Image: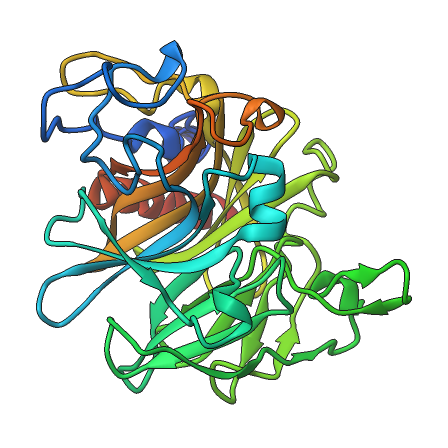
Length: 378
């Protein structure tokens, strides 16, 4: 009897230890690293409110004098020659932020020899199509090695492709959706005037390790295609946060999707609270589990190695850059003032900023959590 009690006691100790690790408070936000300073931080002669000065204007993509462009969205794709290609959208400084993204946004290609930047604006991605119109722009490598760029929100959800990362990019077609028994509204949004579903929004596409293409939009509902990058994508489930009533169920947007450390990850933003949440799934389609806060605007993730902090007023559209199986950097679209305060031809604007991330340590941490959860469940 004593031996049995001793064994049970030891088992409880092990289980409590596993459960404690599975419930650890460490989340994605703990793995951001300080931003290296490439060139001396500057405050004079560049745009921006005092809260984003001084800063390193060689980080990411920006027009330092704000004589031409604002930048938003974006994802980095590395080409075979080692260059980093950022596919983004942007609009002229003569437009306010509110009008810019809705009325003047264009798909833009930028290039750098260094992942941190500076990125050089190379011009429009598809000037031959709707005068270059593009929104929610992201890029990826296709299964056949070609380069693909996706646009949505102000367009219906199109894919452009090229054999070269520099283009020219030609329209491959529009993304197709198979509701698969779910509400089509999880993929496309209803045109209230004409009562039909047309535009997609916040589209992100991932080429999975199994060769299938996976898509998420603003709803965060996972979708899968067995038939190429255009689909049709079958809707495979509801919003990933639907089974977590303690989380906000409305006003969620800007999901980003990636695969690392044997897990599929989704991070999305609840814009009223400026808080992003993190979910994982082992197959990317089912059993999405909440992993805590990914990051908050106030969390000082824009901190340089010398301790200087830039407090950007709006932080949106995160995307993850994965190399050698781990996230190494995150991209963010940032604005120095409230959206309504960025007027035409003023001293305010937006840029793409890049923050390094310890993806290897993060993936090791997540695997320990998964292992602990499985042991406790068993």
